[in-house]
Image (cartoon, rainbow, N blue to C red; front, side, top):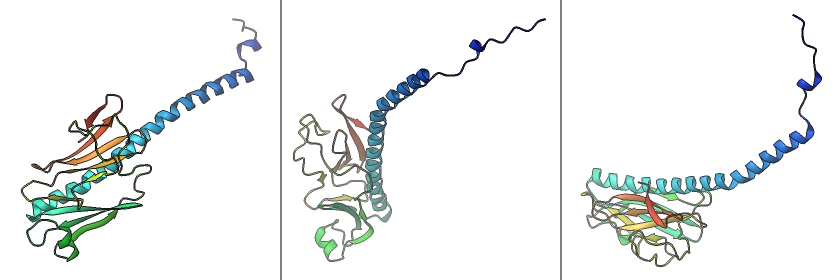
Amino acid sequence: MQALPFSPRTHRGVTLPEVLVVFAIASVAALVSIPTLAEVAAQSTLRSASSDVAVLLSRARNRAAMERRDVGVRWIATPDDLVATTYEDGNENGILSEDIAHGVDRAVEGPVSMRGRWHGVTFSILPTEFLLDPDGGPVGNVNDPLRFGRSNICTFGPTGHASPGSLWISNGKNRQAIVRVSPASGRIQVLEWSTVTGKWVRRS
């Protein structure tokens, strides 16, 4: 059988205009995906911060159960840092600032510096009128993200109870989370605010 003659039109290279079109399409796709990737990274960082705080509190709760005594985490805020230290009750009257100062309640973990641990994430409350407390009420003072009483100590008892309170964490722009401790059970929950639904979503 006779072979068909070769036609140069059936095997041609890619032309410059075609390359430019493909490049333009790829550039537009990349630009569109950048905000999405940034949002995913912001969400991941916020969840990592919330999880780390919840783990720190969980260790204190577990220690209280094992040692059969009160164990508390005290948070100290400075202009450029937040430091957490875990203390063990030394005289069966709970974790008190006075007992810490006198060495009665001794440190068993920390101090742990929170500065720079999560890029773009701080202990703060977004100043938005649409944000509500998980209980349904107003947020209150947006300049107070640490809410464990005047001493900012979260104490866990050996029977499972705890001093209630919350730590508010945000990226300062559009993402908010809370690590919340329930009093009766000492349960530690992580909640995230959904800007889409305007509601809190439980993550743990």
